[in-house]
Amino acid sequence: MFTALDDLVARLLVRVSADQTPRIRRHCPRCAMDRDFTSSGKFRVNAQKKIIDSWLIFRCSDCDCRWNLPVHERRPVRTIDPDELAALMRNDAALADRYAAAASRASSNAAIAVFVLAPVHPDTRVIEMAIAVAASCSVRLDRLLALVLGLRRDAIQPLYDRAAITIRPVSAKPMRRSATDGQMIRLDLARCPNDLALRCRASLVERWLNTHVSDPPG
Image (cartoon, rainbow, N blue to C red):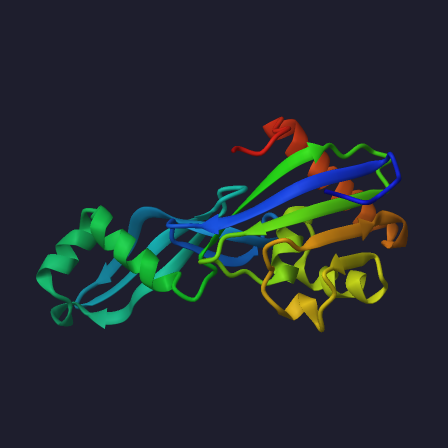
């Protein structure tokens, strides 16, 4: 699968598949990076006299930090359907799912799974990734790599520009394009700034320790 000759190579299979869970990608202030936020299924409602504000509560999938998605802002109560108002008050699951799905339509339809084939060590020099993407999915390559490596998205293009990241097959402006099935990604940590190299290693060591996945499912 891989051609690297160095023994100190971490090898990953990154699988992108269809995701039916509504989620919104946004900056998490607690994690200090972009994270997926998923609906808690609960609303926050603030009613003052004849005006109502309501929010659907989302939570960071990593640290549980809360973000409130506006549903109604300074809305006259009389303009809201009584059944919907009652559903808001009782945290109706179907209503929460409807608002979550509507809000996440612009987000990626992809679920990303990382299988560690050869684990990362503190002295790992190279990280190699095989990308497997389902036909119905689309996720930009820079976003995908940021998620896998535990980096900010804006750190990925500079790594590619300095040849720390190489991609097969070669294509024009790959970081602006969707990841494609069969792509091979190589990250040379020696070409990375020290802080980014340390962050990549730490993120993937943690992933290995948390999952202990050595082989992808059939």
